[in-house]
Length: 532
Image 1 (cartoon, one colour):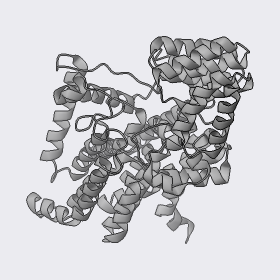
Image 2 (cartoon, helix red, strand yellow):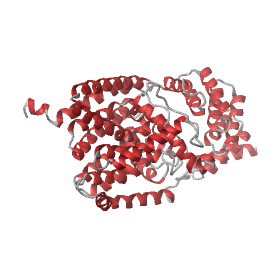
Image 3 (cartoon, rainbow, N blue to C red):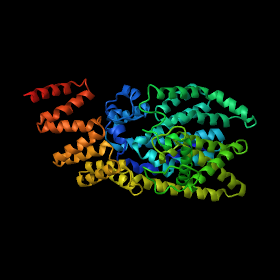
Image 4 (tube, rainbow, N blue to C red):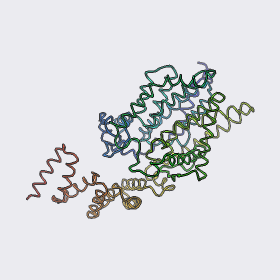
């Protein structure tokens, strides 16, 4: 291949995608692991022991002793392989996250180029996908591998689907579903691909029928998955992750109005991604009577009308808009109330669609008015600006103390953030700061056991045994099944040779794990000692 042909080839564009992606995420290799990384990976016994059978039969954090309604066995397999390779070396986990993100950018380029035969458009959208600051929540955070992993399988399946394959796309869909639940939308993505990949001369109903014929196996897989999650693999309440009925779960209109409000926030973040942070809060919208809800509703209606009416005249824009809203659908809360209202990483896949429509329109207009060079400069500045923001945002994920304090600049009402900040301070032997954080967490939510338990650990480690016992007991009062405080009290009383006090806690541990022979022996010995 000559230098001239290489310059004009796709290989150069792929190389540029990889180099730019590496440039903006290279500083993540020095970042630590925290937040849910502990429960999903570092302290998950199933991951550490590679108990693959447990991955398929239990929830994703059962190995850490917690309950969840997530079932992601393929993600757990990847985590288990990472553990075997890297153990506690966080750089390895961040490298894997980046590799999948880069792979998704490359696959996206080939999907868009094959579908629309517009090389520059495919490159620009893929580049923006790689460098946008909102992606940091999915790339810089080890546990968020589920986003890029599931999208990798979806994109690989979609590309093979476009090449006429039928078997392997089904396998990739199954792998995507077992990586993250949001992959349920892959049949919708394949429908769009099949619909827009047909000759525009065909009528829309004909194109729709032909697309349905091609995707029915994937719809069948989706139905099987939903059935399994509703029965055998239902670890809580698959189709409503809220513990109790409230105005949000009982009213679909409230969920729709709230989605409109969130949509207006998402649009702001997509075009001006400043002050990014976790644990965002959004007030529920019970009516259309606010500016954010009205704006979001108008944008939604306007884009949908534009996409429907422009299928033949502006197919690229229509495809992008349908992709955007289809990608948002699993996390919209409209059909299924899930565990949050708004997270930045929920835009990992949807943003592609909106930017595809916008960049296509910009290219078309620039060609019409002869402003291609101006557009190129504007786009280059845009990419550089977003790249700078991404590099800066990655530093917020450097260590847990910096990370949690950064969140508290924007949200000081999160129990979880204060509790996790306390654990970070405790790991750094800053016990006074840890105590303050735990007490703040208890104040924010006095019904959760974890912060009480963590306070007990602080008091135990600083020799305040009576206070430690008090807080361990408070944790058990809030959650009688909270085994960690039960275990801590048993160990504490055994160390102090208070056998009568230790006996009921050892009994509780044995009741929770009746096949534990070591506990059986300890319990019998304690009974004998107390009897004396």
